[in-house]
Amino acid sequence: MRNVLPILSVLGGLLALWYLAVVPMNLRTALDQAERAGVSVVPSTAIERREASVWYLMLNNSDQFAATYDIQRSRLPTPDQVVSELWKTTGAMALRGRAMTKRSLIYHGWITLQSTLWGFLLGTLVGIVSAVVMVYSRSAELTLMPWAIISQTIPIVALAPMIIVLSSQLGIEGRGVPKAIISAYLCFFPILVGMVKGLRSPDPSQLDLLKTYHASALQVFIKLRLPAAVPFLFTSLKIGIAAALVGTIVGELPTGAISGLGARILIGDQFGTPLAIWSALFAAAIMAGILVTLLDLLQRMTLRKMGVAH
View 1: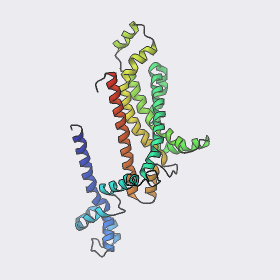
View 2: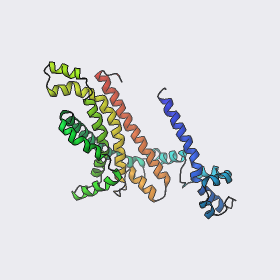
View 3: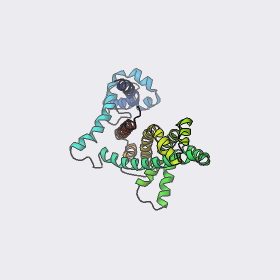
View 4: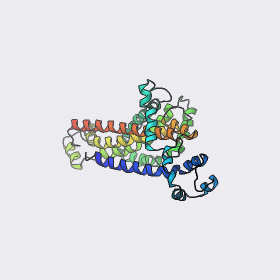
């Protein structure tokens, strides 16, 4: 409960702010609908309302506050509207046996998840191998680390189309590979940094002790450096899997894809359906939470088997 209560408190505060923000965000739409229904509003014309500040509109139209929570195509849907839409496109469709149809977020989530996992595996492999090389080679660290840092300053939104075009030129068919590469690009850096920190975490006295036993470099790596790096690695993996998911969603935006959570967000934006955008965002957040939780459980089991307190 000590861990749950702070999370629930923050969640409750965010929900309260969300409900409060619905009024100023949706009030102009509510006033337009009220005017068409013959209700007297202030100002009386749409042109005057567009020029007036939202605080002025709120001050003079408090009777319309309730209407802002019941707009179907609102600028900011309420949390209950988003949850309802999320259920319609996931649980309700699954109960009807339509979980893998193209109208289901389960189907789109599965498309996104596949590229996320492939990108995560690729990014993890690149990050771990690069970390090992840097720890054992000072010249490699001085050469590679600056480039790894610089690579993270490039906006992924600008880099994603370049990766997609390059993949097309190389004859790589399908959109899954470019998305996986973009996903790996975002997730490899935290894994690289965490692994370097972990491999260097043993005390010099521990390294000296193994030298007195004439341990080889491989034995030092397997017996000391790698076990010491495991807690750091899992922390980095939890950051990396969330970054990989973001990379996949971003990679779906410029490809013109019709499947995946990123595609649902893009389509919702193009057709002016905020509920589709918000439900896809919530689905992505839930997926990220599940992936991080699974890694956390794996971390606990691994450290318990290693005899490390967590």
